[in-house]
Length: 182
Image (tube, rainbow, N blue to C red; front, side, top):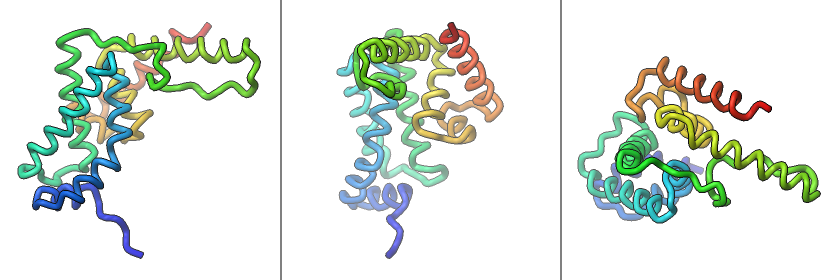
């Protein structure tokens, strides 16, 4: 059985007119990309708009696409630039009541109301702490934890060097620990 085509091959096929290639790319990346965007922007309508803008830009840039880096890196660069534009327009707000909101904590082992309340409060505190991180640290943290990108890939997306990304992640984790430690 042959391996499925790479994202880069699919994008090149789409640039050559293969609409099925685009549908495959979209299906592969829509969920993770939407979660990345939605965690950085609220309300949901703004996240939806930004998500559509990313894909519109992919469509518009298809003839100029070159597989110099991974497709996902290129895609998240587009998303990150749009997020920065949104941040400049208005300070991002994370909805703490939205179940699709940032980084869910594991469910409590039992279903006792007091345990559920404790888990909910931990989740709210984590979401709030992440929302209060400086923009560069929050984006680096989301790309690392949610998309499981390497330091180099995060650097390509954000335009920062490997050591800068490493520092941003370290500072973000230190701030989260300080904020969440009783």
